[in-house]
Length: 534
Image 1 (cartoon, rainbow, N blue to C red):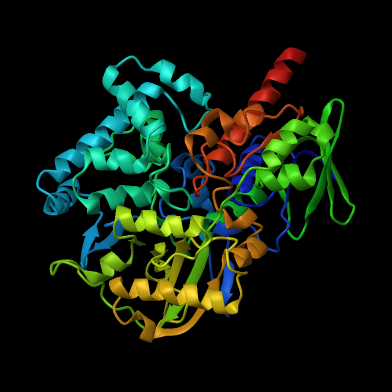
Image 2: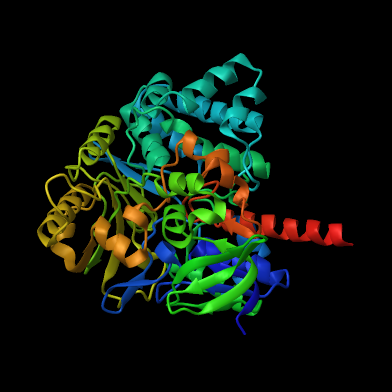
């Protein structure tokens, strides 16, 4: 009963995606999850009594190919496509990310005359660069060193240098005049990373959309729903955890055996390759193929020994710096104030249904990250949030709402002491004060709340040092080096042993793309083996 074709370690969304594809192909698959529930940051978590939703606030990033190919709609997955997709406040006025480009351009030009043209010119240049580089999010990536060789156009070579070797601050300052437009792109590029925007390579986050568009052949104006991008797919009805519910249903449909509360203690292997796993209770599950969908640092530090792939590789991966800084707030409120600074002709409910971002300027972003890098919880936290009860009624009684906030740049190891109740409360109140600029009076509306510092998040979710992307997403940590040059492309030197998850290409966020790519690699290897034996 403990013999399978494939054992998947980790029941996060990428592990479930891999298992679903392999189960659909007719393989016998077991998924082992150490926590009591599936999904990791994307799964349902009871923050308050009777109030469950996911940690993540990544609307619209799920790869449409995953939704379509696994027929997740058959398992109840539905989306609401918010419009606008984002709201961000600058100097008391709200910028709204409408799907109508003309409405966005009018706001950009209000920041600085001609800013819309400069903004579009930069985005178009990045999209052309993405197309010329020929990097696909849906295939094993090339080595970073190969990319420059693919370019011949002098302007593209100059832009490549600016993006991959220069800084995000430098790129945005060169191409845009308004601090507001720069901040819009800075928050998108950096997100959860504890890396200064003035550091080399920080602009590479702006290339994920161009790579996705190039791979899908999508028209940026009209075909974005075919691409794995934030805002494209939409907000899942039932909160982000509805994605996990649908993936679980799909896995079970294809006979995947799912075991929660089952921690893996070590990987079994011999001279011919992977042979299965041993759980923390001593149970052995045998399989000729094992897939690890966990943080590579945890995997190589705790589940593998030097004999599996060599001591050097193990030490290098296990020693990868995480630099996590995530902090979580969930507020239950008895009413939702209108956002401050909305235009008079905009429906407040329509705006509150989309993602909000808090980060007013490039200088403020730089300062917040500098504080955290020095071990100080930042004074002006950067935040991304959703009000999931607006698009998913039923998460609370009708008279209350949940506000789900992900705050960044709360250092995992403060310089002057540990995360205790006092420090956690102080940082949480700082976040609420910042939210009050967008949502006046929100503090007086709170009827219950939950704060989770970085150590809490690591403990509850197993996220090493509270790093949601399993490591920095900078050029040297991406492409053929994610998580290590010897491990790129989801395959490893240990035959039958594969990697997936946020620590593999193309990195973190709720796309499911690493899970899909790992399954593709496994199925291709099986097909090649069968062809050789025929």
